[in-house]
Image 1: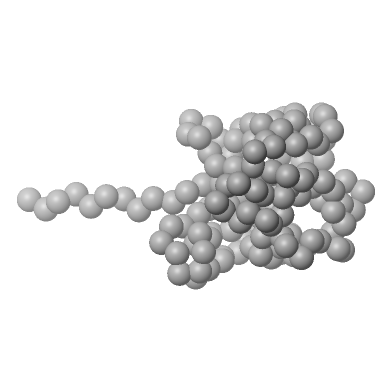
Image 2: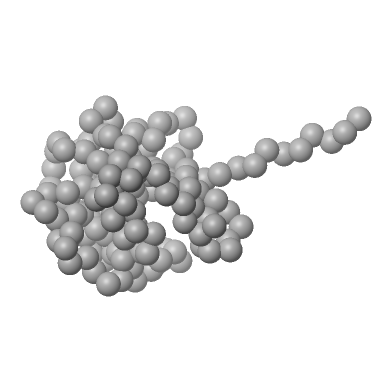
Length: 150
């Protein structure tokens, strides 16, 4: 009798591509151990028993005090990514956009984020997470899928 091989696992994450007046909402990471000192989109991991859109609505409320209706979120890009080039974990990153939301962005996680603000798409900060910058360019070109770190 052969041993049952454990199935490969991949980590799902969601990112909010929130635009207003030609600007995009970014948060500056701190004290997390991952990409600290860099800007990233409002984002997070699925907790289980929730859809990608439900997870994004939850994360937007937890991180930025924004109320999003999951049904209003649209997938703008999917990335299959290794955590880092040569890394041993893989991710499926779902980037979602929304045109309507309630509330003004407010940093709700002061222990993980020391800045939350709008940045011009034409003048993104130099210290933006590289794969996020890449995805934003892919979205501008209407590219729906990309790979990173392979």
